[in-house]
Length: 209
Image (cartoon, rainbow, N blue to C red; front, side, top):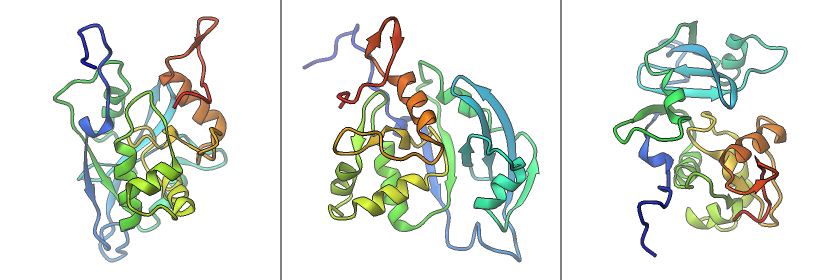
């Protein structure tokens, strides 16, 4: 079926991010620690901690109760030098949350993970805005059909909330499954994207996919 001018454009996160994957030493070196700058941004999906290296955004997440922002980042980047400073690229998270994306927008990401995690995260980037997939479908997509549990773990280790849309993954039974930031946050994100309306509000629907 051809899209007419009235049809909404399918949005895909591959359009707006450019990913650099770290080598084995970049985030782990104690002798030459990587420098990470972070800032706090109030957005339509809540308050976010956004952190970046000189190469790109390396972390987006909600603040954790009982931890300072530095402690939260040290949990994931124990050897890094972390400074509370707004890097030029950090505010780009706001651009990604806009209804319409700038076709020239490219948000650089600098990610640390394993080769398997990189495969899973690349698959997550291919999930269109407003659509869902399952852990099993991702496992099939990356050629590891029996690795559903490992896929789930890799999804949970996604370091950049929303920019890599891990919230769009549910179980084959249509259940929400897990979410690192809590099910309430997963529902919030899905409701922001859902096209099903109920009493004037957007609501997540388990038959959405």
